Amino acid sequence: MKKIGVLTSGGDSPGMNAAFRAIVRTAHGLDIDVLAIRHGYKGLINDDISKVTSNDVSNIIQRGGTVLKSARCDEFREPEGRAEAAKVLEKHGIEALVTIGGDGTFQGAALLAKEHDINVIGVPATIDNDLVGSDETIGYDTALNTAMEAIDKIRDTADAHDRLFLVEVMGRDAGFIALETGIAGGAELILLPESLTDIDEVKSSLNKVLSEQRRSSLVVIAEGDETGGAMKISEALKPDFSKYEMRVCILGHVQRGGNPTARDRVLASRLGSAAVTVLKEGHSQVMVGVVNNKIKLTPLKMTFGKKKDINFDLVELAKMLR
Ligand code: ATP
Image 1: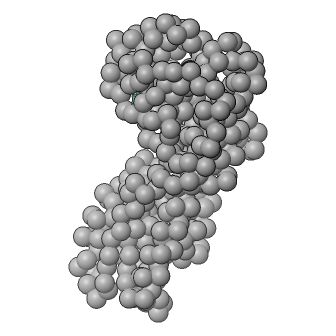
Image 2 (image 1 turned 135 degrees about the vertical axis):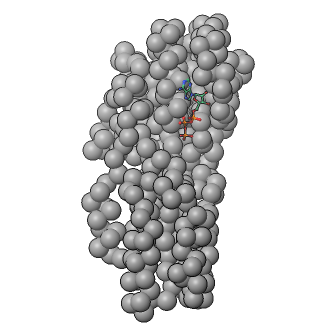
């Protein structure tokens, strides 16, 4: 293995830069050249590629976002687009492609590998933590902490005014962020895409909490909650909770940004480095993950289409601590 390419794709997540740095530095130690592909699959098709050295990745471990830039690329969803991408890889003599991203990125990578016999490796980076094959994904811990800090601040103002706050966090299909920030932020109620939301149950739980002389209350809602998120729930609650001042706060993209936490930097460094060493050992078409604190390889095709379970012990804990 003499030359690899690396790209970041899909939604950005804090720690992608730390992973890129680890890939470049590990490859340098193993005498492997690294070509940086900017703007994800779009940049690959458009040949937005240049060589990077160890020095080029100095001073990026602490930065959020991705210096490689990310993009969504509809062209790559089509066989013709992937054929273009394969041609560009061949032109540069790239022997393996390291993709840093989420399940969509890996679906694309798996198709590229199958159709054009290209070695690919996936490095899981998404704030949603929804990838099978790694206990945590790069960016999740930072997003949790960002959301928790926001919830702490909202609670201060909720308490000052005896308000009922509905806080919506990211998680279209998965409730990992909502569940853990809800517990960490002491939410009275947590609504997840994984469990059916019965609005009458929400009302009676809230009534119970509010009647126990707690005058401010905080509900954390995953954006993919089946009732349609915080705005819809607020509409449904309004008639019965008119005596409380109700406010909705949608945290949105603030959860994607910021400097990665120490935990995310270490995870990204481990996974980025492992991506190169396993390639050198002859593995490909796999995602590198950390399971029970050990590096684990999962076939790429097993990382998408299958839902990663949330920890139902935590769901029970949240109910107990209401
Ligand atoms: P996140 O979930 O954090 O946003 P992701 O990697 O799942 O990350 P997507 O936007 O789903 O983000 O995918 C990134 C890119 O991967 C897409 O823009 C597209 O180019 C490619 N891709 C996604 N799904 C497929 C697919 N089914 N076939 C081919 N390419 C795909």
